[in-house]
Length: 319
Image (tube, rainbow, N blue to C red; front, side, top):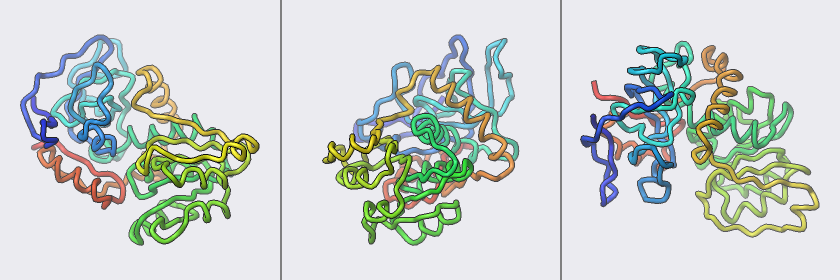
């Protein structure tokens, strides 16, 4: 089969690789679409290797058709599924633990379904499980117009939260407003901590961190949970620990990719039970910025690198 490999010069090449082979409790999926994540850019730079046992090429989420399935699993040949991966989605086929696949919500295309597993599972894990978000909480979500932000804002609103989010342009302001964001901070001309001081947050999902983390933590509501999932702004920040522990604020580090297969399966099960009806009805939407063929992975990466995307960027199989 073919997959998008990363060569020594960090180019993305559509190349021949060995066919995947299923093991016990795994399914083989013919990939029809795979969605991009910023982690793919990090992997291309050599900073985010896949977990042991997963392919070396990128791709954390796919949608496609089951080609092989265990005799007593939930799946049968021909089923349409979307799946969370540790890697390997930029390919014609991929092997997935059966419990890390989900049925495609009724009415969604392959491209839309491919954009669900990573972004929505990450949002559910961090807002609901790590953050313990409740109805009426104020939630802060960095990079609201990203694929992850698109998912997180809608999940938070569906559960009755007030959403504060950041963007970097007027187009992105309009985009997150349509998603339901209540307070929108344009990071180009506003000081994030000053706005947060007027809207103390109970739960934050932060992919930026960096120097702004310390000042922002000082604005958080008593007992708040600030969850750092990436450090796009910088891995370094200075915190006022006296203020931090007096108010009982919790600073949590969290990644989805490093979780065990069993834990990921539990996350996906909860996501399906709580949010699949809303995805099927259109109450929660999967918003696609662009779809490109798998052979144009470099052009797709460039969209994320330039931070142009409003929602997800998706690669589709060659016809």
